Amino acid sequence: MRPLLAVFLLVALGVSAARAQPDAVFPPPSDSTEAAFDTGGGFALLLTEYGFGLGGLYRTGVGGGTSLLLEASVSVGKDEREQQFFVGLFGETVTPFKRNYVLLVPLHLGVEQRLFREAIEDNFRPFVQLTTGPTFAYQWPYFADLDGDGVREMGEELNGPLGGLGEGDVRFGAGATLAVGAYFGRSRRSAQGVRFGYTAHWFFEPVDLLELVPEVDVPSRQFFGTPIVGFHFVRLIG
Image 1 (tube, rainbow, N blue to C red):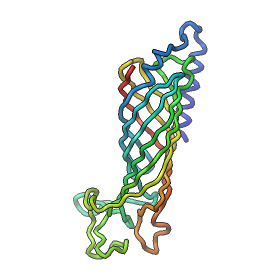
Image 2: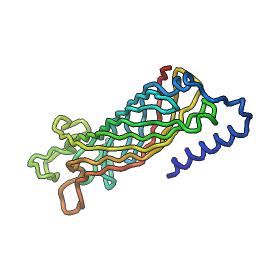
Image 3: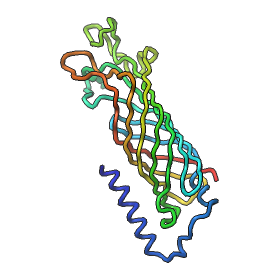
Image 4: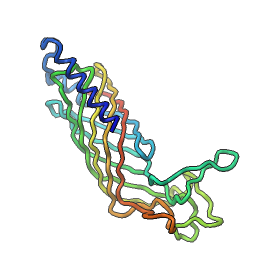
């Protein structure tokens, strides 16, 4: 909640500062000016409750400060109960009861609306956005489950992050993200921005995260929900 509150405060301060100036300083933007800031593509660095991610995005302006938005990303999926411990003398790690590595891969369409465009200068462009669409999850084994019982036993070695990658399964689902943020800078060629929001994914078949042992309650799950912070770097087209 603190990141979201910070964005709203920044927006409020920007509006107050803009209204304190004469109207002539901030003329209403023309259609050509809007197009320069509303259309472009780039990439994003993502931070969620589960870890880091990378994404790509494309925005195309449709007028009135509104852009259609296409986003795709890859990020880590985890159970909140997972705890990693260092073992041995060379920095090896182990996560008790972990069964699978999981990647979340949403491919979402949506709308981004620029806020207060007639009151704030173009070097600070706050926005709100909503995206939705299909989400895929790819899970692969954390350890070599030789007997396929979902429990790590004596002699079943850990795979490592890339070990067993080709032995995974795909889960299909849907998701959505609601976020607010802002782009910065006057350049007509590039823009940098930050976004704070919440993303949620639901899968038709449960994603298997933890071992099938009595100590673990609900080892698989269908719903993933997390706050999300994104740092966007966009090449503008206008």
